[in-house]
Image (cartoon, rainbow, N blue to C red; front, side, top):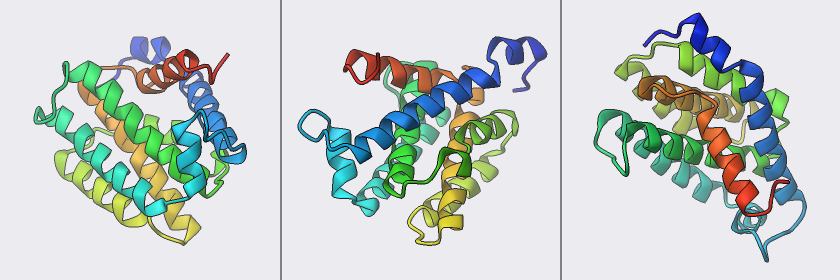
Length: 184
């Protein structure tokens, strides 16, 4: 699916970047400040279990891909892509927060947009997914950051495949955080 200029104007990249930066700031705060009593995310970030996070990322990448191929269905392709895209982003952000990677070192918005405009074949998606999962457990920070970027590009691929805005998953997450009082 190709994007036309009207779609690009409707979903400006600045809106995507702002939403993703806001989310990541919240996760970094939950890592820095122990809010385990009120936040399961904060509790998980304080247990520092990278292997668990990587396993959950694998599960969510499987589900995101399954939504696009029709083998994983909750309520419909678009809504399911928002849900699963937000879950993939969540685990990627938790992994990044765990290692305190600065946002500008992995630029998730750029990766989402790369996936959104990349016209990925099924083979390319499988290769990117496998590489992401292989590198996400790396202790080499360069390889780890590459894994983050690959994961976010798969969220962009799923959004364009489902015909939704790439900003839909992070805006869904922000709405969820607002309902939990984590966002004013």
